[in-house]
Every structure is written in C-alpha cells, then in structure tokens.
Image (cartoon, rainbow, N blue to C red; front, side, top):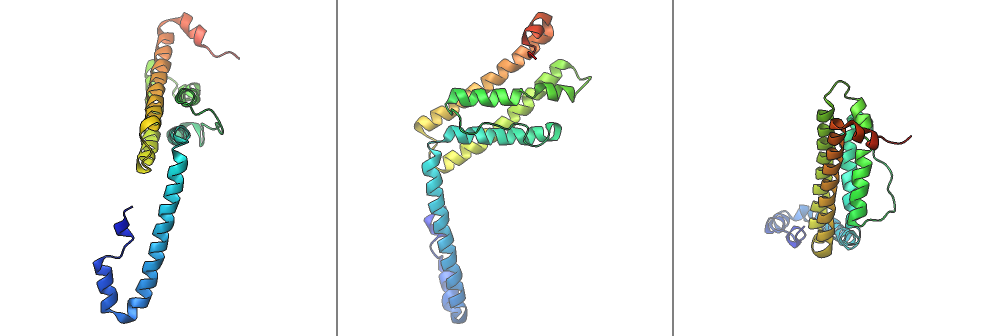
Length: 192
C-alpha cells in the first residue's frame, strides 16, 4: 500500500470543492478511509515484525493448508492435522511436511485399486508436491510482501523448500524400489 492511496487525489479534492453540500459527507468518508488505511498499515507492521521470527511456521502452516485442500476430496477435510508449537528449523519443518503428507499414501492407494502401483505412487507424490508448491508460493509471497524474505529468513525458507523436495524424491524412490524388489517392500512395510 502506498502513501498515495491514503492522501486525497486531486479528483477527490475537486469533487469536494465543486459540491459544497456533499463536501461534509465525502470528507467524513475520506477520513474513515484514511483511518482504515492507517489501521491496515499498523496491522501490517505488526505482522511484519512477528513474521520474521516465524517464517518457518508460516511456511509449514501454508504448506499444510494447501496439502489439506488437495487431499480433502479423497481423504476428507483437514487430513493433515497436528503440529502446534514445534521446532521450526528448516530440517524439522521439512521433515514434518514430508512425513505428515506422505503418511496418507496407503489411504490414497486404497482409493485407487486396480491402478498401476508405480503410477499411483507417482500421482500421489505429484499431488502432495503440488499442494506444497502452492503453500510455499503463498508463504513466500507473504514474506516478500512484508519485506522480510531476505538474509537468514530467505536462506531458511529456501533450505526447507529444497529439503521437502528431496524428501518427496526419496519417498517416491523408496516406493518404486519396493515395487521392483519384494525384499525392500517387506523392509518398508509399516510395523503394526
């Protein structure tokens, strides 16, 4: 938001001068708009100050929200819940995003019976990767908008991004390896 949007334009001033009877109403509307703009700026400043400290939390929440949206049609609303006050280092954030989102693979696979298992694994990873990408993009835009996406914040967020993609690549590789080697499938089977 620019200062120009808070100050009256010459057209607004001319409009008020041309219509004296409407001047009072227009000025009070203008004052209300100025007050609202000031409140928005103040709220943005507060968010900016706190977002710099919690960029990993923002990235995590945004990614999980988008993955939830993507998985909702097949696994129900809020499929990925949990994670309140946690470690938000890039490694821990990436691990949570990967482990929480990939944990739903078996449910996803059950909803696609008869589909080629390799294709199912690829589609699932594409699906959750797409949710992560959307959430990451939103979080990055917010941080850039707040002008805190620089230095350590940027490094941490980009490191998390890379680690999540590596985690998804590793997950897919393990699923594909298990399909070609039954011994690996037994090794990767969840314990009950």
